[in-house]
Image: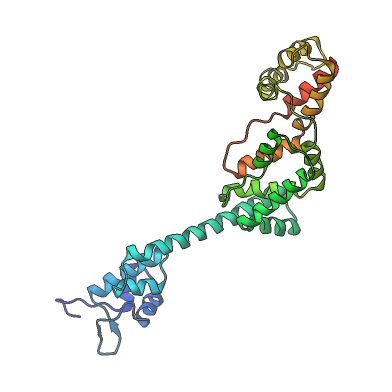
Amino acid sequence: MSEETPLYTIGQLARRAGLAVRTVRFWSDIGVVPPAARSSGGYRLYDEEGAARVELVKTLRDLGLGLEAVREVLSRQATVAQVAPAHVRALDAEIRELRLRRAVLRTVAERGSTTEETLSMHRLARLSARERRQIIDDFVDRAIAGVDLGDDAVIIAQWMRELPDDPAPEQVDAWIELAELVADEDFQRKIRHLAGGAAAPEFAYDLRARVMEHAGRALEEGVAPSSPEGKAVLDRVVARDLPAAERDGLVGWLEPLADARVERYWQLLEAVNGREPAPPAVPAFAWVIAALRAHD
């Protein structure tokens, strides 16, 4: 080899770039890294420009560009900046798919799922935005069909339909559980009963805060709902002079709020939409119901 213009064999070029010889040979065969000369024995030789091309091809391939895109860059038909956006989109899709698979496998592992359950979860996870929305819309439509909804119930029904167009992979677990929950016929009947149940009392919007504050503290302190101390707590949640009929109606309205699966629905809906679910309220509402019944 000339000392003025060093030339490299494929083996030397591969070692310099940290690549397999067959990789450099393949790139040379397809014209991406053409040889600068041939040895007397007919072997391909490469100059510094060839070495630089190998480094560039290696970098572009490491970034995920296909060989056609690499050809375009090397032949100056396109710049790296021009071909990069398409590959960013492809990588985003690939990353999302990998995270989706991870989410399903994590759920399978946590649940100890059967083969059939795994197939079902994988199918649910891969549904399109339109298909996901159709599942929830069908569920809500069945729940409110033929029910005369008040203004508040109409707003709640709209909330029940809330779904993101493209849930993030970390939200997939919640979506799978939500889809399974709304497919349960017992849960469908429960929601339908709730939709046609007792109307909310006028003080309903303030009631939750009082329940969580006072009944929640009573639970933490181990106060029994039927005890005199429990009666004192109840009086801070519900007016002691509330007529008996209204107290009975209040119990009917509170019972669905103390249902763990109804609360789970709202928690999952919040999680699917990327919001932090509210703290569990069922134990506190159940305490108030027990206190109302004990002190009627």
